[in-house]
Amino acid sequence: DAGVTQSPTHLIKTRGQQVTLRCSPKSGHDTVSWYQQALGQGPQFIFQYYEEEERQRGNFPDRFSGHQFPNYSSELNVNALLLGDSALYLCASSLLDSSGIYEQYFGPGTRLTVT
Amino acid sequence: GQSLEQPSEVTAVEGAIVQINCTYQTSGFYGLSWYQQHDGGAPTFLSYNGLDGLEETGRFSSFLSRSDSYGYLLLQELQMKDSASYFCVLSGSSYKLIFGSGTRLLVRP
Figure 1: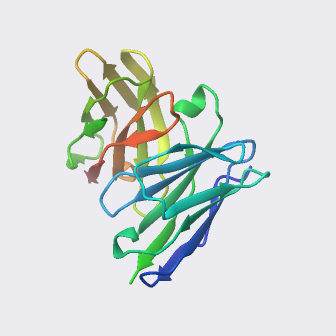
Figure 2: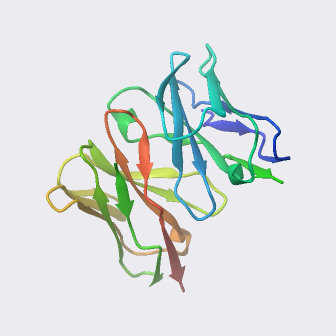
């Protein structure tokens, strides 16, 4: 049973560029959440997708957008990259049921470096 | 808003017991979870307290007191592989997880 997968593993971009990160959820999961983790900090919630719609959003600017596909996979897009966007981007999948409230399965993350 | 506080770093000896405390501020939530993250790895779910009291899962136990806005994670029979960061996490009806800043646990031989 494949867990959560993310691609690419590492990415280096220049300020002002745009980036797309990809995530495939754990088999059977229908909900995908994205988190940003700065070095030495806890993950910060960006947004969550369910049934191809953004269900919840954290305190992130509109430069951060996403998409969920019919097969439940998801993309995170960041436009007009800033140096401060350098972080580990984590994707987590879950079910939208009682366990999904607290138990999410995280992928290994994409390390984004903006220069 | 919601916030959590936990110590930044804890050091303990292999075979010992260590407790990682967490205090939180929130207007309402379902429960408190704990996640473990090794360097370079993904956060993994350890334990959840939806009700006050103690939950035990093998060598790990977690406790919640809503009246004190306080919880802790207890790790027994520490092993070298337990060296990692531990996050207390608030969860609620929105299905988003609110992470603390994490406690880095170093287990020494």
